[in-house]
Image (cartoon, rainbow, N blue to C red):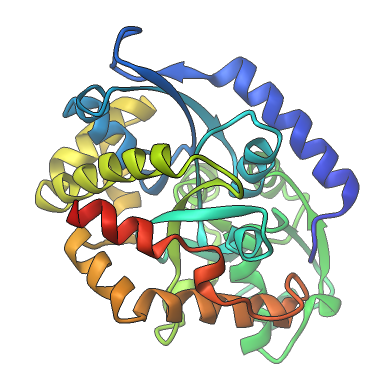
Length: 327
């Protein structure tokens, strides 16, 4: 399940394209301070804190001006961080193997997500029914994670299916046109598919795995400016607490940034568990967050993405997160 070299090369190219085509600034003006290049995925998890920080003037308050770029998945953002095309990015749980392998640092936990599914064409009603069939999956993402978990639970492996690596947007069109039989993907992209193929079946979900946690996170380059990281984390923490206290307002803000219908964002937010910053700090200090990351690490060892489970404190900046809150 490691990203092939050609995929990594393509990722860099796509990242550069994304930055040149989809980059946009937040509400802060040009005189708002140092520019921070921030990547995100166009969903509630990826966009809500950035949208809140804009609307509440938190970037300007910190002396920072955000410059946003949208990406289709986390691995592309890790590539952009490594090539100095981004300062910060957002990843889902399926991409956590990349910081765990030294490619980036996790500077803040965002949410606990259960938005990932394995979907199948009408008539295919179980994971077992996908045996020998074409299943599209974005490599190294939470969609791939959901597929592997479902296969393991069914006593199967990737050898039992015909896995077809695809970009998320390509999966949408391929599934709708019937070119693939199933997919490992996430909401809100599944809603996009359902609009054209409402009879699809969800044959597995990360919500089925109640003994596991699936944290989303914000990441910085493996070697980065600790002072800048702390300043950005403070912004994210303030935005996080505003989001926790004003869930409807956070949905409004995210819908405005994403320029999509509010109802779609609200449906996406229903797959998310938000935690207050105080709760995240407490769970960092008592080792709960490390446990979440260790659980993902063990899974990535099983899939071959990691050779061993690294200590969470080698890539999660828990001390930085805690100190930023207690400043």
